[in-house]
Length: 514
Image 1 (spheres, helix red, strand yellow):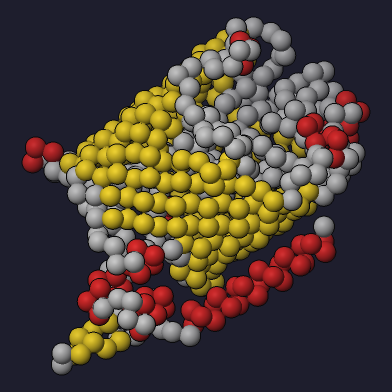
Image 2 (cartoon, one colour):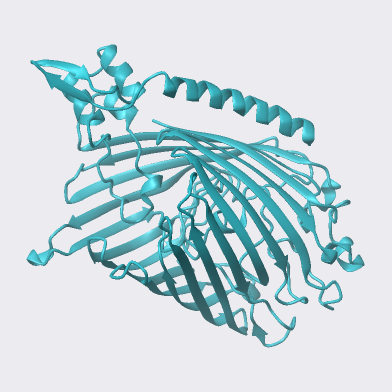
């Protein structure tokens, strides 16, 4: 594994140096007009400069896309559904093809090498503990109509596949592979000043992806190779950045490896989400989410939940402390048993007014687990459609930890040596909340509880470098020091050979957007 890690680190380092050299070969700025002639003030985006210098675009068009505002991005139909970083980049392809403003066209491609040793999942037993190396490739195309008008349309296709995943015991499921599919196909109606009140409202209908709050319960997956999507309706109303109320009624899309994804009317998901930003030091989210998932024939797997939650937080600022508290409670039924579960999260951070703007954060998570197997009550928390990478570590073919049956304190340090470079170090300790319940989605369980709950601890290092919004690199390494839970004979018998040994995970990725 070490040999492959060094090889891919060297390869990606060459790409980074090459890309960085291109960026520093030009300065950034804008064009200005002096005495009837266009001149470069400090120069500009290198791609737009190339388009202008080769006569692909005229000076006026160049100034429109590379001026002080610095982008030819116009809000697409899904702008209020997802985080801006997922949608906002310079549309090189659109500009080069001379498309009008009312047409949006964008391409995105991400390639990531991943490697993990000593797998532990029960469905990898046949792999005999060998190192699993894979290349995850995710490609997207966006095509939109409507520009900045009230009525807009968006198509987004996605192809997710993984190479080198054909060996016995290699990790492969619909979180890594989902070929040639429709990620979004939606229409939207936007009214920016409802009845002269200054309020904005948006209606969305069709297939869509969604981000809510901190993305712990509903997310458009970023690191994962495949993405959650939903068919149905979404509505929001709000006043600028002060507050907004969102509501939705959808059918979660069921992913398939090769055939087209589909919705299922036996799986319904709905909810409301309120965001208040009136006080910078006391920002509030409150939500209700309902799920009725009875699509599988096995009644024991049916989920009918009501999830209530709230979140208080302060956005990090230099020289100030910050915090985040989220509490979530679930009631309902799982199969024929009653369901009552909860999740608690606390962050306490401080951003130092020093070079590199270091930020130190302390984390604590508690996600309830089932106390007694086969009784009349289920207490394992369900994270629904949430993301985990930003908090727990890299997902892909690695991350073993879910927001269920988990206790985890930890800390993280984040520094910014340059505006384009982010470095992180994270350490977390992991325990089962209930010793007799399953460990995440690994399939591992000791119903006697004699294996205990010590899952060990991990150390993660991460480096992210963005040349600009169109090209970025991401590198990460995790060493998981496995705990005594994995040395118990009942657990050893369920794992691949060597599954109790520490695991090393490494990845290196590059993303290009046009």
